[in-house]
Image (cartoon, rainbow, N blue to C red; front, top):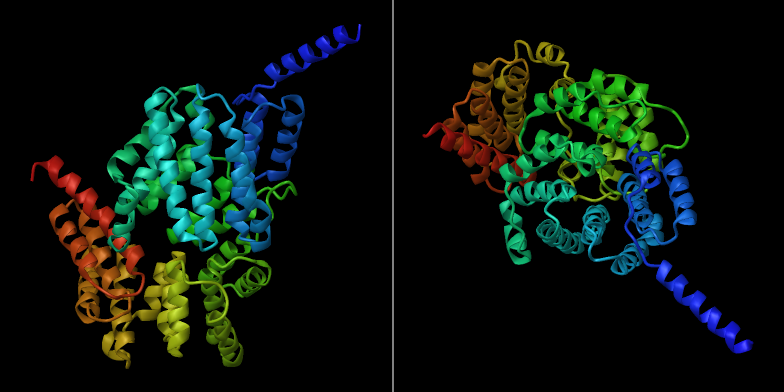
Length: 501
């Protein structure tokens, strides 16, 4: 009898082992959790994941979705203590995926997603070398998965985005991409993303919102199609109230497109439910907007950001903006104290933070008139900015860098008002005066001239100015400006080829 019972127990264990085979099942419950997470409703997303783990403990998709939660928390909040708690999740999840069925398109795709997201996270936390290798692993896995499962369209989303990113690596980092075997193409990558977004395939529809996020940022910054992207956001009727990721996307891009009023409206109309991610980034975004608008409330938001944010990206930039507010108010003591904090807080991994650090090191303060004109212009209040500079010329200013900035600033204002001829004239003066100086004004002037000629479909002239821009050495914002110039060269090259010139 005991032998019989023992045999039955062994059979039960055997069949339980068979039933415990791991699967990648992106079922309706997982899809609902995924969409909640993409709205940045991380609490409700985690609750749905927990239920799915109880119902289907062998499903690996919940572990993939939990990486999205880690990604968004670490990306937006940059909390070092939270990073220490979550960093081990990467290896645990990859080990779990290794036990999944290799005949599933999610076997490699899930691993590629983990590597892609941790590449971004590691950049945020200053581990740039590790980030490069994460990117490479993701790049290779997506390519391999596309060969094995060509009908699994989400491959196109990551492959397209990574091709664009690899295609815009600045020359200063080209040695690294060559060593890692990373090759890219802006045109083919963007084409792949567009094809993916237009597909009615269920797997493409599932990942569509995530793809929209990548597509909008890449099209805005790499293709320089600012109006097209913001029109796309409107035409797609993206939910900017209940989807905080889309609200961040639209507000952030509107701010960078000098549409402060639009961005402020988006931020004010966001859903206030408590299940969304809590992040100081909202204060940073609102602080920038109110600064451009000239509102005294900007100080409240920017100081709250610097007090509550535990990360490093844009900390120096935010402190610079606070110091400017005190400086323009005439409170030089607080302006100087805030500037001292710039030298000790944050990092210089972003171009904005690097510029803030350099300005703080100079111990010179910007001309108040030019600074106010810049802030109005950055917010889209171009006529207010023009009124400040009306009747002035470069000779009005005493310092060489102020003369240079005046010509650049006048060029930008006329550019944004659509007065191309006047803009080009001022840009050329800025380029001539500043091409051998460290300030970014001359290089950015060359870039903007390229943009104007490209808009006018004078592709050869645009190409010449983009090349001129890249040829300039040792100036502020070098990598960021070069990246945009390189993308312009690629676009104009394609246009010239298409025109048969």
